[in-house]
Length: 227
Image (cartoon, rainbow, N blue to C red; front, top):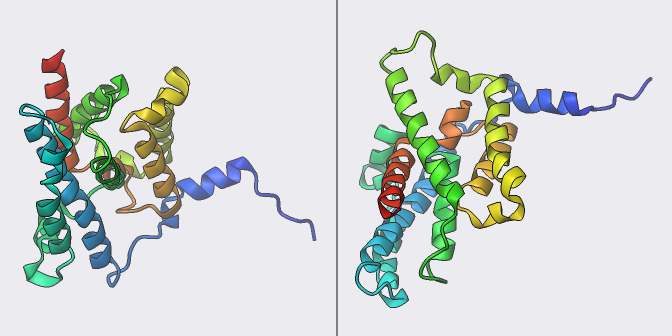
């Protein structure tokens, strides 16, 4: 018998097959929802705390006062059933994207250690791009376009295009892309999505969600006004 050699083309086919999804089942899906909302919600509170502390003193002590409400939201997100906030958020927004979860982890790790992180131009580029994409997907829900933009998220070609955008900062900036919030999170999300097709099998849901869309638009407006 001739041994089968897995080529790069075969590996790419496995990663991009829509039938190779390993989505959470009905039993594990609630726990996945609890876990990711318990990251996104406290990260949002800490971001608000950073914005509030900066115009006054910007002191790390002021920012740490927001750790208590952030921790309370994280615990509340794990409460099962109707009493849990993740249950009601899940009814309206389902599960945050993979990029949202990774950005939330970044915020949670950075906040106790330092007051602020030096901004990178790629953060503004990604925020503007995500804002435009969100508007396109929103209009797509009203069937404004002759084709379904959301349906493209199931196509391997779109997955390859997102990888090209994710790797662009490294091609242009080299290792400086590691210091930006966005490029490496997008790469990690695409890698995880290529293996398990989480959270819905659609690439758009892996890289963007309504909450992240709103936050990135606010971030882009704030950065542009500061300039």
